[in-house]
Amino acid sequence: MKPLLEVDQLRVSFRTYGGEVQAVRGVSFSVKEGETLAIVGESGCGKSVTSRALMGMIPPRSGQVKGGSIRFRGRELTGLTKMEWQQVRGSQIGMIFQDPMTSLNPTMKIGQQIAEGLIKHRKQTKTEAKEETRKLLERVGIPEAARRFEQYPHELSGGMRQRVGIAMALACQPQLVIADEPTTALDVTIQAQILRLMKELQKQLNTSIILITHDLGVVAEVADHVAVMYAGVVVESGPVGEIFDNPRHPYTQGLLQSVPRLDAGKKERLIPIEGTPPDLFRPPAGCPFAARCRFAMEICMEHMPQSNSFFNQHEASCWLNDPRAQRTEACMVAGRETHG
Image (cartoon, rainbow, N blue to C red; front, side):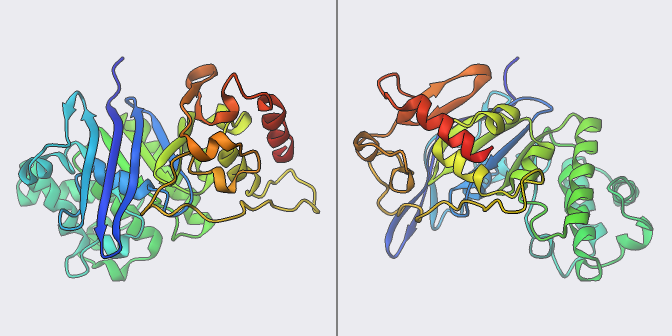
């Protein structure tokens, strides 16, 4: 079956006073119908820029899609006009933003903001849109929906506002929803409720989800596949169980080692990833993680590694996985033992 979304060698740059920032440098992945793909990595790795490129939301004055392809149901999106993007957003691809307080209009009632999409994309009357909005608010777990319809964003709690954001993203029943760190600003209890709600709605509507996050606990809870990003590139990807059980890139191992484990002993210390990400004004010629990698070889500094394929669609771009690297198994086993 052909994927719902196919991203191939996507490149996005931004113009600044200091020069050109190469924020996304050849990202490729695909998403099937009804599937959840998690894109993970440190802050600044290009996750959110990638998500905004998929929505046609790169600001033209400072940013540009420099190359690559974004195909949604076989249709190329990178060359769409502003008017064509407006038809795609909301009706075919929806988005849940990280902070609903800044993404919602503070001067409009929440009911009006949700109904706006229904009137525009589904051609409903104001009366029909109001009734549909009330049902949507109830569906995402907001009580007294008729009263909430008339309230402004500042009158709701953070969890309620995020539920409104989910209702807006799903109002026109898009085939794909991009969730950009939707639980970051919420406490653990509300976070669990939001994740459970997203999973339930996904099953009901058969919606595909791209989840942007740095929280591996969230990934384990909801994702089917994972793409690990570092310095604007995908360094490892595959099914979530395979990535967690058998990481094949030192950066992925480092992320897993820096997460607290419930089954660990009281004296176990978390292992941070030493160093800082590379300067994307002048990206390195070789592997972007080489300067922070304890297994780095000379070739890592000079040449970008090719992607190697493993079991069950698992891929990683690391010279340690090259057949010519003699230390491969010893390094990878050492990394897994440290994590375990």
